[in-house]
Length: 317
Image (cartoon, rainbow, N blue to C red; front, side):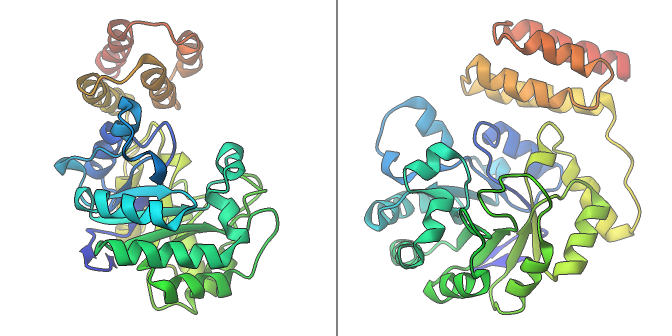
């Protein structure tokens, strides 16, 4: 799949997720088959703030390329400045018009922007004036209620967006119910630019069904990939061969977390973030529920967390 002048190795995209799609996790997802990975959302107004957590959100490395830095904000001038500064650090610039988190929407950002199409158009035009990097915009089916998604998507395309990610739920739905992939098909039929569908992709069959039903150019995967970066490879295998790939083993899951932990330690990540990831990597493992309970307090030392996963790797291997 191609977004603007950025050639991707495939059409599988890691969605941005606050607290999870940090650099060590993105590297794992690229290693295991994601065609494009996305940073956590970066506030356009924060790009000059020296706080270390903010600096980490915008940090990228060669091992994750091609990568996208996803911005959010409301002021076109601030957003353009951020795009100008961060463009050299990524292959694709992202902008979020779909986040349903209440704290994001209260600031007028994320899905709240969907109620103001003129502002959305101005933001897209500002980013395109400021940077020559391709622009990937993430949207939903509406904020509190469904909107005319076809008209909105065309507006973004005409303003200069190079591709769209469309999560086919309203922000009010959050992640409840089922994503409406028929809406994705309606939008796809009107666009010239690539359209990436998002919502309810969890394995090879669901990815194949979504692509077949919608005609989308690609798919974006979020929650299902947490703790399971090899999901991208399994989906790619199914799409190519029409049959399931071998399941990820507990030893492979433990090995991936230990790789994540090495990267997180090198970057100085705090324990709450590491434990949050550790909890996700125990999903599907025998005794995983008990392990998650031991991680709840957020006070375990890194050495103890490492020992747990090394033990899992050894016993499963």
